[in-house]
Each structure stands twice: as structure tokens, then as C-alpha cells.
Image (cartoon, rainbow, N blue to C red; front, top):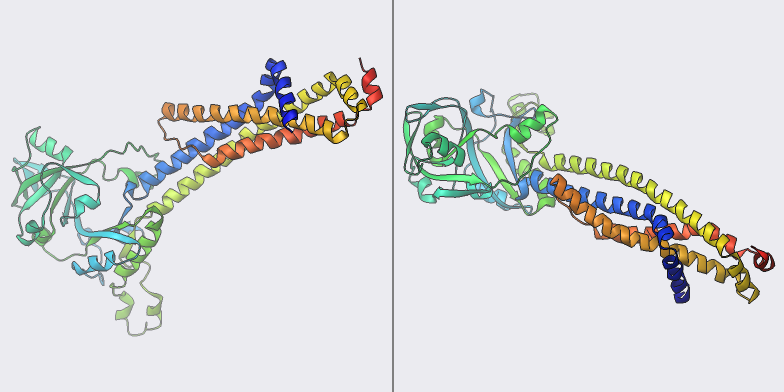
Length: 435
């Protein structure tokens, strides 16, 4: 075997240009496959990072009706939805798939918020505890965040997002400034911001826009949850954010949290005297209930689409491998013709058919394996070039490298088989007479 490999390299080096052109189809095919698999894998990782919990494995669980998020301020019938207290958080944290949780109130304020005689519109007002900012990936730029004393002391304090603080106070330090909400003065204690992950989603529908950009340009203000009843003037159900143990646990965490929260909702059916049997079916379809964001399923659909695209591109790249294999067969047939007298001499000296067969199969395998190795290097380089050019992440797949090299070797064996069989069947007398 080693002798056959040595002879194969002698033949390749003796016809450098011909060997390179023969390997070109294999190199292009393997390089294309490596580049495709690496960029698609990197894209899938980015989908996980940006869509599934925005990289921190968190998901919102809100009161929804018929697939739309609702609140008492929307004039919706919230019959049966309980106003949970902080004890529900311990139950959520006790779920096997959940590591942390927080509860909050949220209201879109289109009036009643003033700053320096200017009325603010479209403000997303949030009433929550001291864990909300951390669990949602916010960090304090200036000032401080909420503390437990703010809750217990019913303090009128507020935290602004960076853009709102800059716009309201025209570049001045917003900390210790005052904002009025429904005539109640609130002191700004901090300015917050969220890390920009650089993710630019493709929007193909209104649903996509609402998912990605609905809150993009809204001002955000965070106040202590204890002061919320003063703003709302009535009790209303909480919304929740839970943090899963890991990305793969998010579906389970969402289902377990939904079941726990919805278990406290009283079905409207229970008020009907003749629906005892129907009540076993659970809550009515149009009743307000807790539902999580379906970001995990959306991410899985996008990954499925990416993988489908990858499969199609790999098949296309496979065509160049087929062309490369045909090129190998062609050049091996030429090699058999050129070395007819050599084959005849070997057979005349007693070489068996399997020796001749093995020699030419080895040469074809070495030729394609060498092309495969060069193709792997070119593919990795191409993947990083495409990644930098298109600004997409790249994740080189180890299994794709191994499979590519093995596959190129298999191509050499398969397409070198016919020329090798032809060489092994040559009649030694006729071969020696060949001119």
C-alpha cells in the first residue's frame, strides 16, 4: 500500500498541471460545501442568540386573548384572572426549568406624563421590582437602579432609558431631575441602557414588525411596583418574565410557567350552572389567559428554513463533485492508456490483477483525497471571507471536514474503479505491443 501511495505521488508530481486541473472540481465542490455548512451553522447560532431569549434565555409571559397581548387598560374583560402577589415568584423559581423570575405591570401612556411643561406621548411605563433590569439585560449608565427600600418606602422614583433621558434634558444629567406622572412628581434616580447585539432581523410581515420593532422607538420608564396603584387606580394582573436554565429548556419553562399561572384563573364556564362537564375542558378559547412569547418556535422555524436552504446548496455543490469525479475518471483512463506498456511489463513479470487494480485505485484515491484536503482549507478560508463580507458569524463544523475528506476519497475509489478494472484486464502480450 505504501509503495502504491509513493508511486501515486510520483505520478501526480510528474504531471502537476494535469493533476491540479483534475482536482479542481473536487476542490471547488468541497470548498463550497465547507463554506455553506460553516456559514449556515454560524447563522443558526446567531438565531439562537438573538431570537431565543435574546441570548439570556428569558421569555415574557403576558395576559393574552386570541393571540394578542391585552391589559385592563385596553378595556378587555379580565374576569377570572387573579392579581398574584410576590409568593407566585417563589413557585415560578421552584420549577425545574426556571432559574429566576420577576413580575411587572406595564402600560402605554399617551398622556399624563410631563417634563418641563412638555407632554410625553407613547411612553412605556413599567412598574416592577429591583430584579427587572438585571433579568432583562439592562445596565445602569448613571445613577442607580431600584432597591428594596424603594418598594417598601413607596418612593416616587423613576429610571429612564438612555434615549429618553437625553431627549428630555437635552444632554444634561437626568439624575435628580423631576418628571410628573398623572400630576405626581417622580425623581429620576438612574439612566439605563441595553446592550446592542447588532442583530438586524428581516421583516416580511406585520407580525415580524410587531415582534422586532413594535417597542423600538418607545420611551421606557421604570417605577417601583409598590407605587403602581397610584398610577393605575385599580388592581390589575401582573405580567411575568422567567429565565430558563438554558436555551433548550425554554419550551419546557414556558409551558410549566403558563400552566402554573393559568391554574389560578377561574374559567368563565364555572359561573354557568349547567357546564360542570364542559369545565373539565379548561379555559375557553377566547378567555384572557397567560401565554408566553413563541420565540423558540419562531427560531426553530428559521433554523429549519436555514437548514433546508443548506441542503439545497449542498446538493448544488455536490454537482461540482460529480463533475470532478468524472474528471478523475477521464484522467485515469488517459493514464491507463499512457501506461499500457508499463502495465503489460508488470503483468509479464507476474503481477496479478489485484495488484494492478490496487495501484490505480490508490492513485485515484490519493488524487481526490489531496483535492479534498486542499478544498477543506479553501472552504474554511472562503467561509471566513463570506462571513466578514456579509457580516455574518461563521462556525466551522468538524464533522463536515471529516465527511468531506472521506467523501472525496470515496469519489476517487468509485470513479477510479472503471479505469482500474480496465488496466487490470489488459492482456500482457497486447499491452507490450502497444505503441
